[in-house]
Image 1 (cartoon, one colour):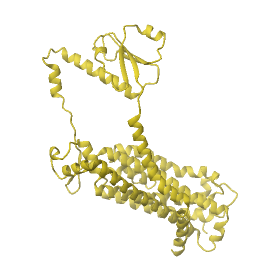
Image 2 (cartoon, rainbow, N blue to C red):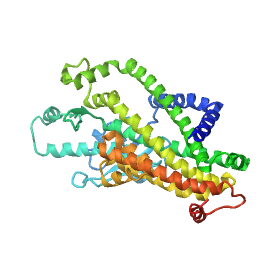
Image 3 (cartoon, rainbow, N blue to C red):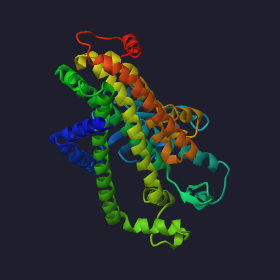
Image 4 (cartoon, rainbow, N blue to C red):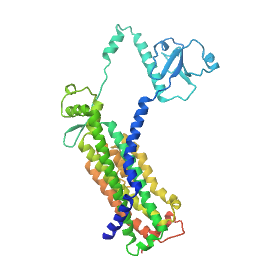
Length: 438
């Protein structure tokens, strides 16, 4: 263990003292915060180009009631479709043709565009037409004061979602926050495991090409050398992660107090059982759930703690495999084919992660959160929604048991591969190396 700690300390000190580590650690959170601010400013100041749409309404009931919506500007025309399309007008985006019997046949609507259409534009147009046709159908029933009745019965519903815990208590939850957290942290584990796993592999290749390993293995066993390198780089990753978390929590908490202090107080009052109309400010249930979720200490501890555990477990597991690949080749170009079997489970985990966010308790999400090669990503997609303790601990135990087994297997490949030069090994040969008794 002393030799492993010496090697791990050397790896840690070497990387922490690099300018690249300092710059990345400081600039990465600043970059993400700046990116969010820039995107928000762009969304606020973006001027949408007006889209002129000419309406040919053969029914005579839709066009007069179409209202300009956002960047969509409607205008009617008495010309025929052939006359309008004979010569394109530069400022015309499209032509909307309403059939004469549209109220009996709602499918008799066609939209012709000179540019690519979007789902939002199409939905905005169809929603308006649907409302107009429904209103016309209601008029056929000759109901007195119909507009007033419709206005009175319109009742927007804002539903607060709460989850019943195992102790019988209830807490407000926000699926909006859950989806964002699941996607962000699942993607972060995927990227960070690849990033630091490749760092281990590149370090092994560099030392092998410089003949450093041949000198070092005269004093330490290859397994100790590999384990020390993995743990040293893991310590770098954990330190960087902790710095980012402190920065995010500190800056995020300060911004929340400045810009959403009243909302936090109102959400806390509602969480304590005070009715919504007794809070100090008007706030819908969705916003209250968001504030309650992101200010819940238990929720934050579970998310950040889970991320740290599954990141370390996933990193250790994949770093052992990356180290084995690095020891088997002479340069980075030769790693392409050997990295594919390692990359496939991670890519598959990213695909299943999307399904897990939609159905976190489904069979697919459950089993892939138990399989150690995919659990770091998939379990992080499930964790914000609440995972039974036995499933969480089973996933963690399986992950670290598999890590120990993989280190043992990769160590056998490592101790043979670091002395092999001038040959591109296949996956079959790596399996053969793992069976050698050295």
